[in-house]
Image (tube, rainbow, N blue to C red; front, side, top):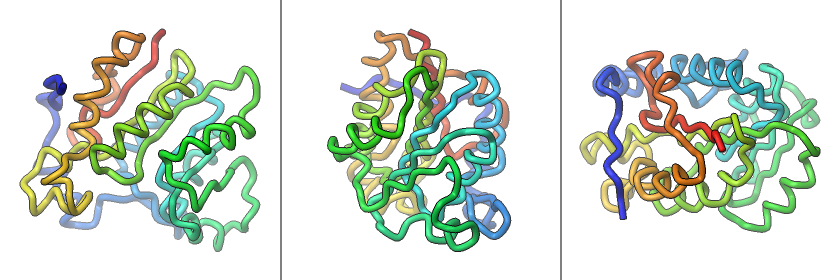
Length: 226
């Protein structure tokens, strides 16, 4: 059952869509592309300052730019991608053994066997946040939320990326996943899963979400307060 969860009134849908039209939907770290907008990176900087995580579990490595970005902001990174070649641009620029980045490529981010693999890379007492930015179809994101929310330390965040695609007409939504119009995307997953997690101490952080009017991830900034 879905609960109605809507973007903040300050979210600018058209300005956010223009970031895809004009190529501003990503940022760069050197020559490596980060698949996140500049405004959303500012939000990440804010929540990192607020919650002081030690480690980020990231699903959706892509070119490796966001893993590098997290690493350069003082975090240990465990990045997961089904594509065995994910992160190749970052590794080409910086080498295969970049300090504090673990590349778990060739794994689906919903494969439960990853739990043990990720636990191997965590140390007792480390504060953990999660960034979900892989396959954006609803069922996949639901499985990610269920699997990875358990790793988030109280006081830290889980960011569920790219709910913007649920909020646009089909021709725009397909940019985020070709079956999102038919099957739903991150917003549907959030509406289904977060009411259950709210009972376990999770809350939507509208102060971080509302920092700017442009975001690829409206309704996606959640803090574990339990």
